[in-house]
Length: 373
Image 1 (spheres, rainbow, N blue to C red):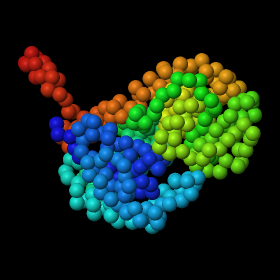
Image 2 (cartoon, rainbow, N blue to C red; image 1 turned 90 degrees about the vertical axis):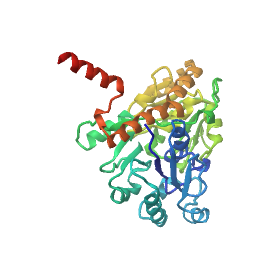
Image 3 (cartoon, rainbow, N blue to C red; image 1 turned 135 degrees about the horizontal axis):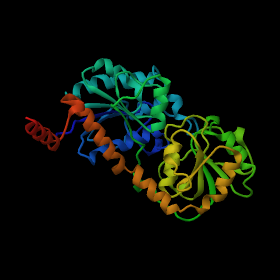
Image 4 (cartoon, one colour; image 1 turned 60 degrees about the vertical axis):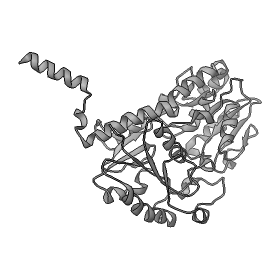
């Protein structure tokens, strides 16, 4: 079967490059083309100038000058503040996206939406094409799409939220990483790490309480936001990190902390640490129930006692095993195989859909029918 062309709708408020690698959605869009090319797909990307992806064709939505005009901000400011639809940069992006994709899309192609409802107008513009939400980690779904969630926890969250049952044409595929960018370190580590948005919802209140009981250990915060409300002598703030800085920081940590207070759809920075052999200590709900193997790749906690005991015991974990497990689960090759299967099943909807079978099963049916006759 000839594989369909994939049309990747870029992240309108960032650029697909290492400067924005701390944005999970941008990182996935950046790596998407390389991952799917491994499985024989042609990828056309519609994104802002400066994309470092390996897409077969790059269609520029906003020029470098326009990116500088609309998207530049202090590195400590949360990039998600620019993600609002209806803003001048969103409207400019979309005004170029709509004619560009109409010019290129062909019957049987798949339209991939890594940022969901941001460009839901395309469902109206191109109703005869299949639209796929390719990594749902956001709270609002589009109607009439094929859906790929980041975790089973997040898929089930949406089923409950919408008061609906399951359906065959939804998939769960974890976030994917280029493991060549994450160098393992099997030494014990020098500090406790937090790498993410500096916000109450990310569990900074819990980190402040932990800091009061860790003795001379330092907790280092790296991310966008204001750390002032969580000031403590055992807490240092290094600001947001991008590119290779992220690997260097997280690989040299004793462990990473993710005490997120909401249902975490995936928690990519914790997995990035595990790719380097750094165990993750996290809350005991959401995607962490899938990404953290209790007592093997990290610990899941409920009480302050749990958090402090986990930090005390994390040195007993085998950091090589942590890295090996994470790298086998979240590499481009491993996750690409899952995307390939999902895209093949989706593309089969243009033919026999759910009933599509390889020849060996068709022969079995013919033989069984012949015997019965």
